[in-house]
Image (cartoon, rainbow, N blue to C red; front, side, top):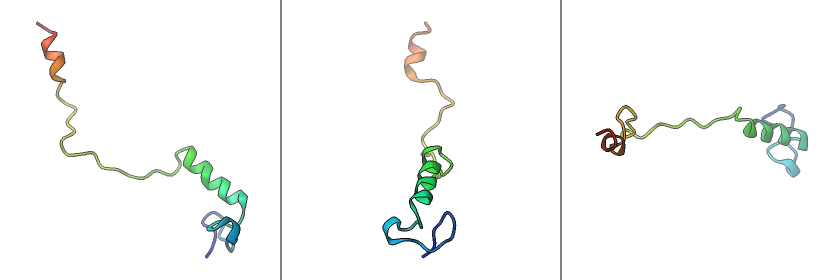
Length: 59
């Protein structure tokens, strides 16, 4: 297995990375949101309508 950061052979101690440095680089990318997991909104999430409470206060 190769390190996903630098492509060197992985070290069992830091698997799947080759070193602590590459593991820290990967963690930093997650923390700065360089990596994102795409998501889809639910089909019923319609934000074009005002909430019902807003209509009641506009008499």
